[in-house]
Length: 306
Image (cartoon, rainbow, N blue to C red):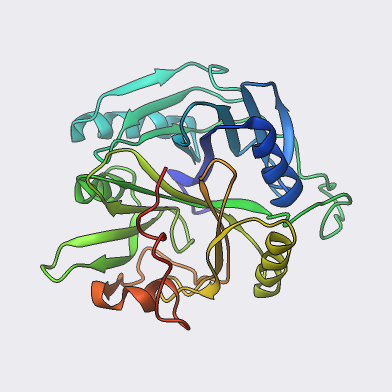
């Protein structure tokens, strides 16, 4: 297996205002599976994930993201990345095994945009409801949109160039695409740690620690349009789509959870190997970049954050 270091986005921890409403949204409509939890914290996963959980909901007075966490290939990677983060100028703390539910030890740091990021290498596995020998293509009992896995997250904050440099220089991510302003600076950067088009996106913004969306993977464009019908059937407000991005070429829908956190379902993007040249979009073409057929985007898309 050639993938080493950071393998993928493994966990997003979200703040929600009304846990009952959030659970109805994420379980009954989005189709995530509840693993465990109480009134304060609930742990969810997508159906085709083997790890214990990938989404954490926490009751809070404000919406947004508490942290995102990436899974590494080996425990030794944590020590290597901790040293690199310190050399970059970040303060690094360590969380002991089981300090996060079902997880091995972690390192934790705040990147220049103000977001908290954690790295871990071990998490308990509870399977995907299918046997490891001669499995069916999907288990019984799926509900709602039923995405197979957590795909990426997208954040806003100041000093995004330094944050992107940290991900590339320290964590070995590669830049797949960027949105460039007329002065040559980067407004948005799309970063990948594996062959995905991106595992995290970072946008320059004056407020630190802001959250734009978390995204879930669907296997086909047909599933995207089915998701649109399910969202309409359940009166879920849609921010953008269904459409196709120019950036990344993915078919997509963006919609809101009851707390105002933006979700995305995403399908059909290209594979981004580390030697693939990075693509650049001019800011004047942002309409096509976000919604290629319509060549425009919703007014809320770049401005409403949690």
